[in-house]
Image (cartoon, rainbow, N blue to C red; front, side):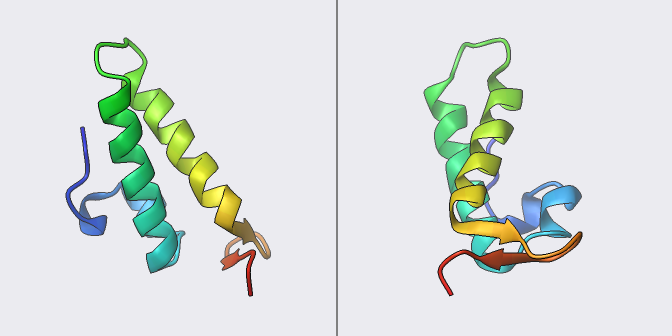
Length: 71
């Protein structure tokens, strides 16, 4: 289901990504969720697309911290 705010994101996302990366994740997920309506793997695919969107702008600096690729 779509996420209206970053607070509604799964804890695994909120607990690991900076605020801006959460915005990217939420917007990408919501867009993908709408675009894949009627597909059996809609939610799983939307999460994969959202993570891919985050990884275009952020990378893991170590085992925990995500940092912008454009610093």
